[in-house]
Length: 97
Image (tube, rainbow, N blue to C red; front, side, top):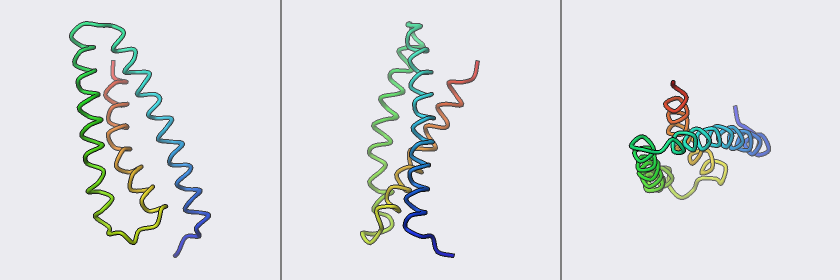
């Protein structure tokens, strides 16, 4: 079964929206943790920077693995999948009491 271009763009838009909602939750939870100060805030800030660098550097190999004939929708979907896992893991970790 093939998907129409409109359907793939719609899926990409929805996935982008969903990831942005989850990421905004992570930003809020991290902010709350950092406002507490101390060693916990320092560790969280260091972890945040390290994760962002690692995720950014790790994106290029993910995108080029499929070659240079990928559609913009495919590249967008790969990018969202690349970032979704770490964002979800951070939301779960930061939501624990």
